[in-house]
Image 1 (cartoon, rainbow, N blue to C red):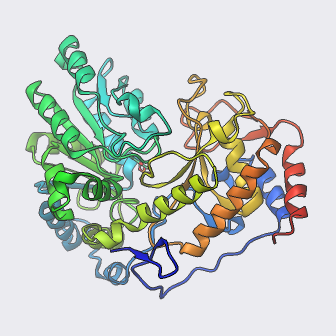
Image 2: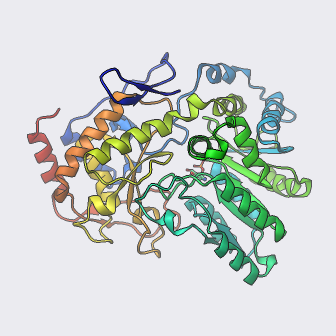
Image 3: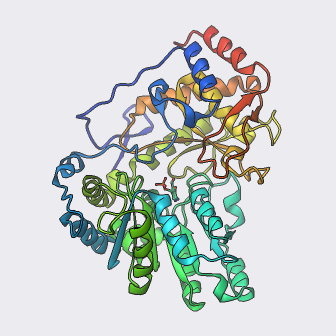
Length: 476
Ligand SMILES: Cc1ncc(COP(=O)(O)O)c(C=O)c1O
């Protein structure tokens, strides 16, 4: 239970923890925020965190640790080979995911690099429900590419379908029947999805994709970076699985995959990542690359202290009060924005509340960086930073993004309801003044993998005018 009904009416999400260690934050004046935006090239990822009041750029590695995680930090065994910490983590992976072999790496994209090097050759094609940029880059660097099979419902920002991350099974079957098997080393499932507003995939769909993969003799690869949210949504939206424990749901999902990988910056509330599987030959292949590029396989790219934290984080993930905290806050934001007429992606997904920048800034053109402009404007009027998910996150050759969104990530256990209410209030103010938001242009198109870092130039002086209007409102 992480929501309470109020005597005065209505319901609010409630934090199922209390705070013992705090990190002070400050709200710098609007003039200084304008100067910070200039210095940052109008890209939220370039802002210095000390200039940010509420940091909603990502949840990655930014989740708060529990007391048990903080304590586990000191249990680390730093032995180069055969470290006790490694074996404890491998046992935890076996207990929760049921996989025999575990390889730690320094973060999610390192898993992707190891897997792409291990399995992808030039000309290969990897089906996926939707791409994630770091995986796509790693596959392309090996000469392969991704093919997306997201159902049409996933490419809309509206509606109330609870599982917009589902595969189109018919299209997947058709593709596999027409493509030589040697060209398809893996079928990837992202649970939940990142780039389509944190929308989950249903268990039935995962099981169906896995069955198709088995029939064609292809490995199922499961990206569990965002699985905490996906578990919560299966538990709350899938009638058939309402009675199952989080642990049982997690195991059912894990059993459907041959290889699992995850960003430990998300799953496990630590700074690391991991790959696990049951097939010994595959394990030895991947291990070779981990030894080459990450570190000795018993620590990969991770610090042992972080691995201890990740192990305890795995147990935290099995606690409904922990995994529901992000989605409950996100749902609260989405519902409040809907009441105020602010366009958001529905239904509420995981990871963050996603504003629909296409509708928010419909006075701007599709190539005007609606998402990036909105993210900059939000920082200006609130000190909160989100991130654009649109043109700026794509490659220069992809001249139009499927969506222009702004993600306001909700890192678990970090912010309280008053922070969330503040952000809702300021975004609503901005929506009432949305016509003042102007266009952006790319300053530098040379980078192969943007990693979300861009330099953008505003068209005209709309930021200065918006800052002046906000100051007039006398809200600070
Ligand atoms: C679905 C998914 N896969 C992979 C990654 C990459 O993980 P990392 O940021 O730890 O490299 C992320 C990060 O956001 C993600 O959301």
